[in-house]
Image 1 (cartoon, rainbow over the protein chains, first blue to last red):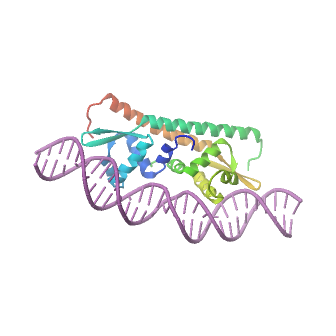
Image 2: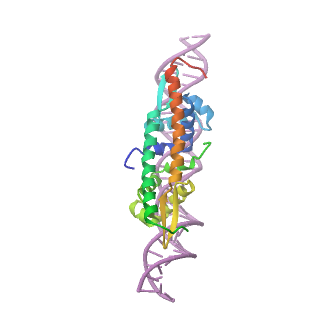
Image 3: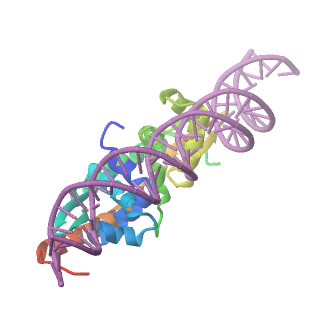
Length: 105
Length: 105
DNA sequence: ACGCACGGTCATTCTACACTTACGGAGGTG
DNA sequence: CACCTCCGTAAGTGTAGAATGACCGTGCGT
């Protein structure tokens, strides 16, 4: 938890993940998201706030509506973070694979 | 939620994320993880089960102990999944950035 | 001006689930 | 053998937080 865990933790919720899937497809207004999801509009609003705080979405006021879209920067940061995760795990894996010769079951 | 959401949802929990961080560093036994974390050993065990079901860790019995390590395949799958996420969001972003005029659904 | 759709926030309820304690089995060491 | 450590699982509790309904402000159309 030394770094930006907010994004990962924000995506660790089914409804928020569903929201991000939709927004990754195309920007939407809050009411549109609420119509597509099995939760009320306030629930969507609160989830969007969490996603925004995590840097995963950006919003823009357009007349009456507020258009939310996935934030490429936030997603890129999350990807990089996961990359470090992954590469480090690979190092550790190779390490133990080299030093521990034959056991296997 | 059309694809493997289990990994993302599994990482969306502070303690499990902490466990994964440690395992990405180097493999550990359950008791070692429990010693480093502010939760009991059974809690760690239950989290490891979730992580295992999500394909994020693999375990191996070594004598008395059970060694858990991060699963590079699972992490790679998650990374790829996030990549698709990301690229699609970028597409949408460029799209709306190029033709900024108002669109309708 | 009025009515209406959109959306943020608050207060409240309620459920999922993280956590603990207690237990039993398996393996190691003397 | 006795005794220890390691670990998984079951049962039960407590709480974080997801969801709802209500309220209010705002922007648009007529």
